[in-house]
Image (cartoon, rainbow, N blue to C red; front, side, top):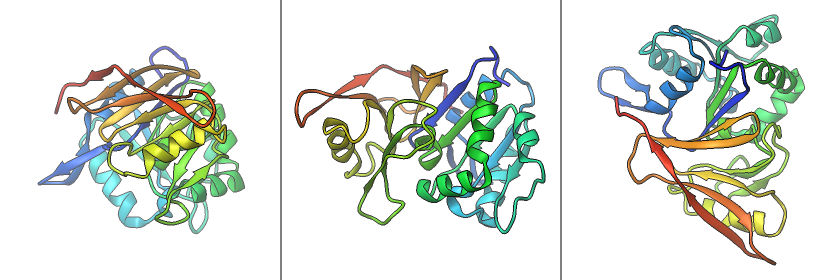
Length: 245
């Protein structure tokens, strides 16, 4: 559970894990920040790889990376059937739920089919910290843009809506992201919202944005708002620099 018992979400634009010569990947300071929000010396962390189809390789790499942290790690998989009989009880017993990237459209469809959307909402209200990268960041919001349907980005407007905003991920690494998000906000397809560059995370308490954090100097976070007919205003936000590993 979170240190203060309040609902926390950490939406990561990219960079949850960093390359490691010995172990392949290691948790970045963003993921360690998420773990610190739990206030636990050895947090219980549940990993969801639904957006990548619960691939064994993805799950295996996540376990290897999480092994670099002092944590009790588990995962929920939905293919070919749920690996945990009582997913609700399992989620409510966690301190942190981390959602990996991939197809946010497929993730949302499967979560709703299995009732995970409402289980996660309950866990969030009970103080379980929710975090994720890319699809795992976008899913908590009203929507954003996504490559779930192909390399040409398309709008996503049916996110879980725990957070009443739009969300932009990979904002500085994919040239389609910035203009499309601004277009969607300017025309009212999506509500105003926030965006994060690679190596940046957006931290919300309840439904309020409280700060952006990063482990790379100069990486950005942004507020996106409509600014008259057919235009949007982008405001760069302060970003707290985390200590490097």
